[in-house]
Image 1 (cartoon, rainbow, N blue to C red):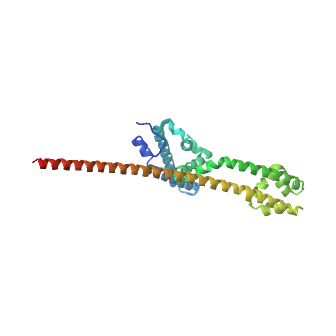
Image 2: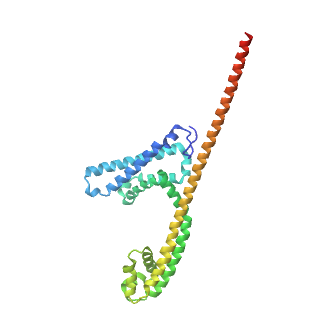
Image 3: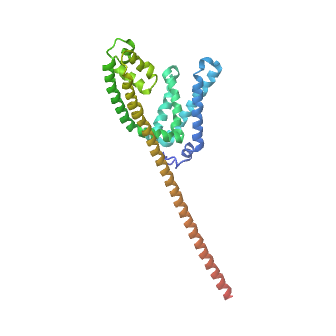
Length: 291
């Protein structure tokens, strides 16, 4: 059997062509979606008939074996090249966790079966493109997280000094020490009940200007820094889309060049046929004159 490659556009064996074909990809996608539905239904196992739960678990195990068979097929075709792809590592680990003996008895391993649904992230081309764009944006996200952490630390120190020295238990719980202040500011940053659960308690404790402090934190942290995440992700998606478009244009140009070459070959063939026909006519004409 010819050596397989991870390039899905070429196939060096019938088995490689089969596992890279559209019908095989659609089959795996359908099994992932079906498995996701089964795992969701099994969360209501206590209220379902035992027979239904039994057959659902049988189907879940059957799909797990199907995924394991898929991995074995790819290992047989690609050999050690299989592990050169990060997505293949992801599939191998997720399916391997599902195949751990006795995993059904551990709630953590049982819950991690749902990770198989995440295989849709690379099986579906559009999801794969978005996921790869997010992964490429991670280094930039790290810098933004560092800025946000530094900003939160500064405000947490200020909040602890301004509001932590109090006898009010509620405010003391919010800003009594540095970790508590950082956690409270994170809640303020998400704007989840920040007005009544955080700011109003500080105001009632004798700090009427406290809203200004928290509003500046919201404007800087939420409206400025957090929006950088959105800008970074949008930029990464745009770059990924541009790369995909350029790749598509290159494929179109290559197809056009091949078509032009084939057209030239056809024209050359027609010219040669025309010359041969003319030569044949000349020979026939000479023979007829000789007669």
